[in-house]
Every structure is written in structure tokens, then in C-alpha cells.
Image (cartoon, rainbow, N blue to C red; front, side):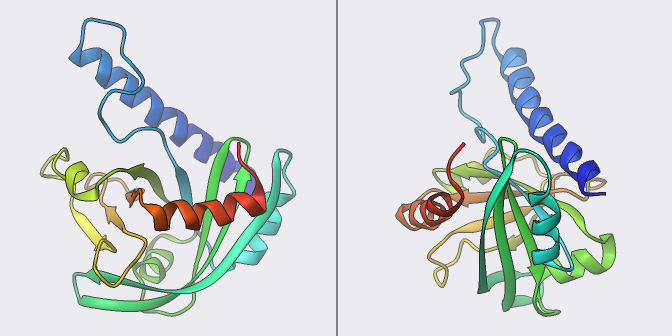
Length: 195
């Protein structure tokens, strides 16, 4: 099952890159510059799991993976039900050239717990690091809805989840680039290396 998820993750990252390239080609008769405005390259892929440590161990058994970084942390976000703080168990590791985030809800309050109940474990989101979440949102079409907003004053690390379409269960996460984000992911890369 882990191998199937690994193949899906690699396929999602490739599809996102091809989608960006095709859209750039459709907008310009010239050869597209990979640095054109847009979401940019995939930063990481998030996987929901009922057991973070077991899932990390399964992925680490695959060729091309390495060390893992784990952290248990409270998270605050603006949800449809209001401002909510929930506990998460996070883990990061490389699966080939893809940074994988493994998320285990540690309580029933998070949207991640609801996702696990409704969809089971598996790919939850594809994440992009952007200079500004607010600016990136202005490029979205009306059918892409904000589901969880971590781009709030209480959070030093700004993020937001968006629905990627009404029939797609895989979300889009935007992470705002900042000194805090650089330090957070810097700690992760110090532990698991860079690719």
C-alpha cells in the first residue's frame, strides 16, 4: 500500500509540474520560462495517517528515503466552525526527490481528523511555498474554496488549505515564505538533508 501511495505522490508532483508548463505554453507562444508567475514547484506532499510513526517506518523501508524529522505541535486555524486549536503529530522525510509530510491528528478537533474519518489515510494535500498567500489567492478561480486558514496573527508559520475542485479530495496547501518558514524547514533539512 505504501508503494502505491509513493507512486501516486510522484505522479501528483509530475502532474503539477506538467500542468504548470502546459498552462504557461497556452498563455505564450514562446518557450515558457519555468520561473513564470504561478504557484511554483511543489514544495511537499502531505499524507494523512492514523499512525505517523508506523507510516514513516514503512516509507523509510523504501529505497531512496532517509532520516525523518518528527514534531508534536498544537496548530491554530480559522475553520468554518470558528477559530480552533488542535494537536497534530507531524513527520517529514524524503521519498525520492519528494518531501513528504506525514500528518497524524492527535485529537478529533482538526480538519485532518475529519479527513481521516471520511476518506481514510492517504494523500491529503500538495503544498506550494509562495511569497504571499493573499496574493496567490487572487489568482485562484471562484471554485477553489478556502477550507482552513492558518494565515492568522496567532501563527508565526502562515499556511492555508484550499479545495482543489469539488470532486477532488486532494487539497492545495499554500505556505507563506518567511524567516519563520525558512527556520522551520531549515531545521527539517538539517535533520533529513536536502535534495
